Amino acid sequence: MSVEESIVRLEEQVAGFRMAFELYCKEADKLQEERAKRLQEQLTKAENTLEIRLEHMNEFRSQINQERATYVTNEKLDMRIKPLERMFWGLSAALGVVVFLLIPLLAIWVAWVK
Image (cartoon, rainbow, N blue to C red; front, side):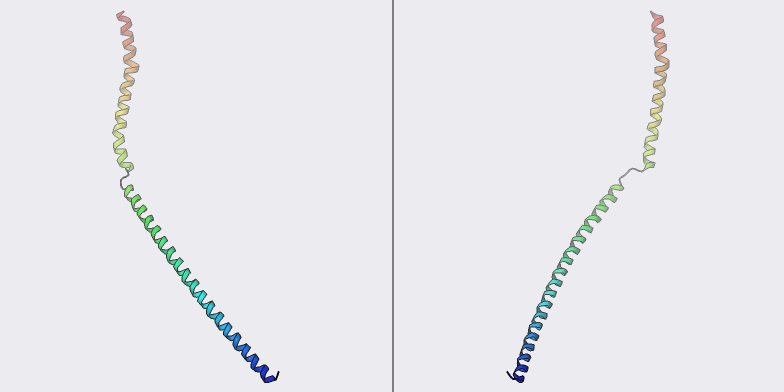
């Protein structure tokens, strides 16, 4: 084999390697584009899911705030309970009078009547 044939053969091999390398690069680019597309789709799905969850959380917060508006404040509760407490203590005092004064007097009267 002559030197010129060897050079031609090497050039053909280099051309074959170059074509193989270019094909490899095109395939790698194609795979990278597909991967980027899939990642973008996953990101979009995740964003949509997050938006839905945040909407649900905001609805829940709104419900909680509406419910809080119906809670009784301490001031209103005290206004309602204070009169009831006074009635309770008044009835307790009256009952105490009955138990500690009238019942012994009744017992004395019953004993005296016999």
